[in-house]
Length: 221
Image (tube, rainbow, N blue to C red; front, side):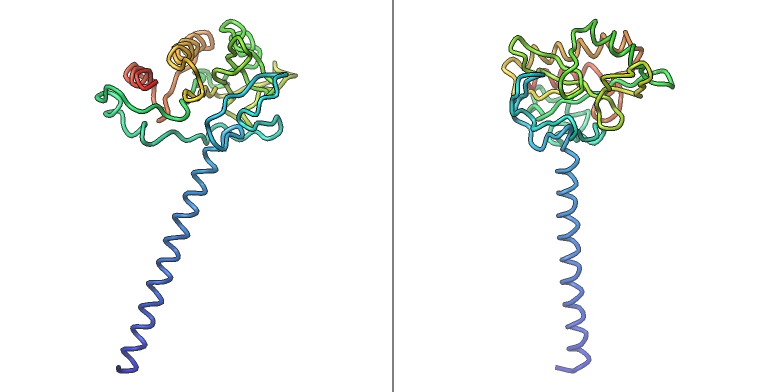
């Protein structure tokens, strides 16, 4: 084989190997990023329900000082593929986590005192994780409400000076015994708080939550 041709073949082979390594590295890093994005409030894997306050359940492996940013939680792409799927599919598999947001209409956001009063009206309790929770008769958490800023927690002092642009509501239907009834309460609580606090409810795509999305989710439970 001609030396110049052999040189070209070697260079070409090397480039193919390098491109392959770069592609593998990109895919690996993307997968790691997706795993990190799902780590909301320390939830590395959904599937365990946690207890509130003095009940030391192993739940989400949560610790007060190890709370992740709430805005990175990703949804199940198989479920949330498009709005057309939501409107035309009679039944879809439920996502691992259902997450909606309540965004303040006022520029200054929600004030801490207003939040405490509103949460009291709808029966949400401040838990050991420093977020608000809906508890069942056994003090197990049906769903949680976190702040949209920082670590997601609500301060336990100087609440009057606390402001947040919005709230994040999340529930894990797969760990609940009566997920559909709890989902109904979840939606009702969201709607009541939207009125009480003057906020707008957004879905997983940061668009206004529609009845079609609600019904599709309910049917999936």
